[in-house]
Amino acid sequence: MNSIPPLDLTQQFTLIADEVSAAVLSVLASAQYINGPAVTDFEQQFAQYIGTTECVTCNSGTDALYLALRAFQIGAGDEVITTPFTFFATAEVISGVGATPVFVDVDPDTFNLDLHQIEAAITDRTKAILPVHLFGQPVDMTRLMSIAQAHNLLVIEDCAQAVGATWAGAKVGSIGHIGCFSFYPTKNLGACGDGGAVTTNDATIAAKIRSLRSHGEQQRYIYEDFGLTSRLDTVQAVILQIKLRYLEAWNHQRQTIAQRYGQLLSPISNVVAPQPLAGGNSVWHQYTIRLTAAQDRAQDRAQDSEYRDRIRQQLRQQGVNTMVYYPLPLHRQPVYAKLGYQSGQLPVAEQLSHQVLSLPMFPELIPEQQERVVYALKDCLLQTAASSEW
Image (cartoon, rainbow, N blue to C red; front, side, top):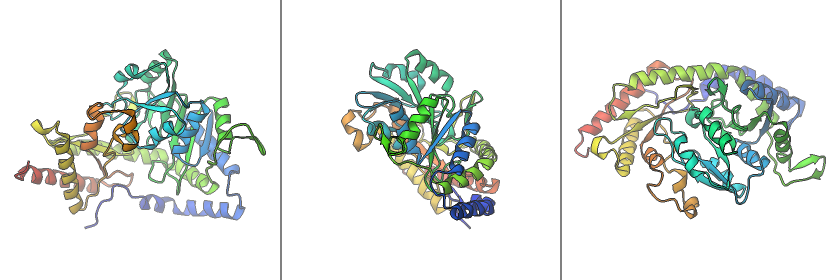
């Protein structure tokens, strides 16, 4: 019996192989490998899809965040409020521009920033809030923008995992002051290499980012700032143009899969399924459950981690492969020890890091595979419960 991977890009490529091959060969024959009309065309198409007037592509989602912070002149002495439960790049870029990340705990249902705790973290050094639409689940942007406006703060959306997700009918990346996207191959809209983009309705900020992504150049060989080289190459641009045409259908398939997971998992104890907020429309980049060691042990993080890892190993033995995002929250990373966060200071993020398990999720996942995943999970939970250790 074939194993079920957490992600399978081969089926997606098979669907669009002829289109991609023709487009890539066309680029190679043109010898226009950097910038050029294809990149501009994709920027216009992506801006239209997100619902903004501007899109500037770059080399990666990490660069998109870095360029956004630089464009808003956030740097030394400034603070940026963000989540500790996300990929390292979100905080890394804050530190990279010389600012300080201020971590606020997350909501146990959505895994996104707990907006009730934002205002307590605001100081006279706070310049921006950097929410992450984690696993494809949109943040409550209505409430977040209200908080930001009340305190005159910028909102930089990390949309790396949420392309196509909406809040109150608007796509993420169009609601804050700027949106930052990753086109890493595993993303819902993924290139065949690295890639990223920023979206905004601020033409001045877009122009600044275009300069920064090309060494700070204002005109040929005239530099008014220190920038970097961060371009989306033309091959990736034409591939992304093709994939963008399929994105809504692929996201809809993910939503169908998520709904089916919810139905299949609902009778199973010790499993907490993800709970989207009303008003949001998730695109389910990941389907991430929580496994709890149960009852009196539920708050014991070491027990939860051991329980989760044991279930994961048993699932692998049954041909079901899963992922853990993220096993150590950012405020507990060695590089941020100097910030002085203590164990237990952000309890929800810390608990999640010991409980979360991402089940296989990709548009081509068929119902029979999902049923196999859930049957295997139920079997592993029963086996573990029957052991003398639990």
